[in-house]
Length: 421
Image (cartoon, rainbow, N blue to C red; front, side, top):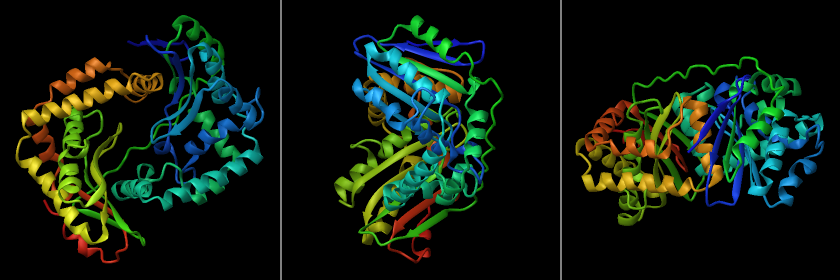
């Protein structure tokens, strides 16, 4: 179970004690990410995430920042998404207070030295270059570009090489001042912990945190009246494709039916598209279907790496399965397998203190409420075969189709004409 404590300054603390573990995790989540950026500051959330490790008032050099966790065999990292940024340390339980001090320090006291900003910009530009060279990563960027175009939801989380290069120290300071405030921050503590003692420590560390209002993100604009297609010509040995549809965000009442739909189609090694495309037809090494849902956007898409000569066939097979699941109810046996799979996966993942911290913290941050795993299981159990069919018919429509290809092609019409249901 978990406990939520809200301090007078608006800071929220989520504690989740676990038995049978020797680990503990401290995670700080901030409700800001790439969807909160402007054209000028695209990539600033990710840049800040990098820069907090480059020195603090107590530990002025990068080595002094990272070495304490290394010395105790801990794991530390950070991540940036569209709607949140996170910083964490996972350590052996006796060191959890040190981990809290460490994560709090990088959040509250980054120095942001000009020389380190200059160097880290170069690091991030190389990270962007790496993403361009990895088709399985770059296709995700192109997918968002196709769906949402020139607005924050359609931009790469890392920004562009130009926006990163041109970001000033003042831009960074202003962004932190605006977004890194009490009401927009959650401290998550999970594992073998002493709740009361750690809550008192958090109160002490964060007594002077800013309490100003944060900047809100712009509303996502979605427009689509016909199938959309984006081709990125590249000399590759196989074509990477992503084919899918706009779907529901996680506030939609049928979100769990959508999750199960994606799982049945391509989320398991025994799912329909994995069996059809890899096992029966031998067309791909990797093929999967996934649902991507946030607070204001959602999509379901199948991604695969296909022999360049068999791309058309793969598109046809994927669309055939989309059409089939829209027209015929899934069996109770298949539905039960999907439900048991998703519940079993969640049970395994949540054995880890870092996963548990994220599980509770992200729910609170984005949804302003927390469901336990058992409450989520109950919602999954209530999904019927009719619900799956209803969702499939709603999202699998010709005008809702989207296709991204990375491969050695120039003729767009060759694949666009295949987008039919």
